[in-house]
Every structure is written in C-alpha cells, then in structure tokens.
Length: 174
Image 1 (cartoon, helix red, strand yellow):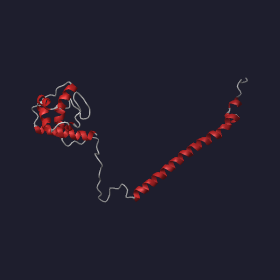
Image 2 (tube, rainbow, N blue to C red):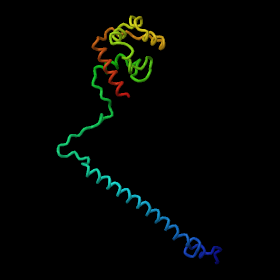
Image 3 (tube, rainbow, N blue to C red):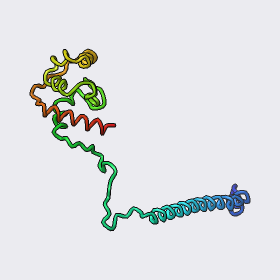
Image 4 (cartoon, rainbow, N blue to C red):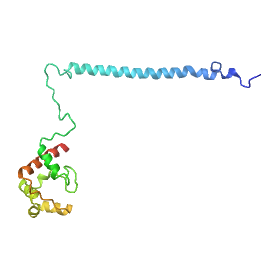
C-alpha cells in the first residue's frame, strides 16, 4: 500500500528551510548567554573593587574592641521614655485625640504653643473655667462643636506626664 504522505518531506534533516535556521538560532542563544556572563563578570569585578576600597579605608570590621554606634533606633518600635504618660494618654485622651491627626478633637502635636501650662491644667481638670479664660480654647470648642471632658481626678503630675509624652510622640512622628 502506498502512503499518501511523503515521509522524506517530514524528516527535518532533509528539509533545507528548517535546517538552515538551526545554526542561526543557536548562535543567537549563545550570544545571549555570553552577554549575560559578561554582565555578571563586570558586576563581580565592580563588587571586588568596592570591597577593596572599603577594606583599604578601614572597612566595616568591629574587631579590636571597637564600639558599635547606631544612628537612631535599631528597632521599628518608637522609643518612648515616658511610659506613665503613655498609659495616662491612652486611658484618658486617645479616644478623642491623636498626636498628629484630627479625630473628635484636634491633633495634639504642638498644642503647648497656644497656651501656658497653668491654663492647660485648668483646661484638663475644669474645662468650663478655661473656656472663659482663653479665646483659643473657646474657638476650638466652637470649631469642633464638642466640649472637652473634665478630668478632675488627674493630678498636676499626671497632666505633666501626659504633656511630656505628647511632646515625645510629636517629635517621633515628624
């Protein structure tokens, strides 16, 4: 029986058109690999050069009893030294005030520029009396349409700790 397909035509070795592309494709592939190898070699030479410069200038070694000094905080947690102030702020202020953003009340960063500490103590313990003494506080009351809660149980020491915490947190937020 005679096959209607020519088996010789299907053989790649006997097909001049397909066979002629084979060296071209392999040469492109080899050139691509050579280019990548050259880039890697150049990067390695650059890295060795940078390492040599660092080594000749003293390097990053911490041997010979050198002191390691870090610029800033090595952890991602903010460093707050006033934990008592943070606790009091969280318990009494954080539900209405954030340090750098407005919430129900204004942001607290930089508040000390607007009124002295004696007025602040009065405002936290007896806000109604403070509204009468400060135009700034009266304007805030009108702007936010909310009266500040009175915290008569907070002592002057408590208020000072909260103020110090807000100052520390304000600096770190910048």
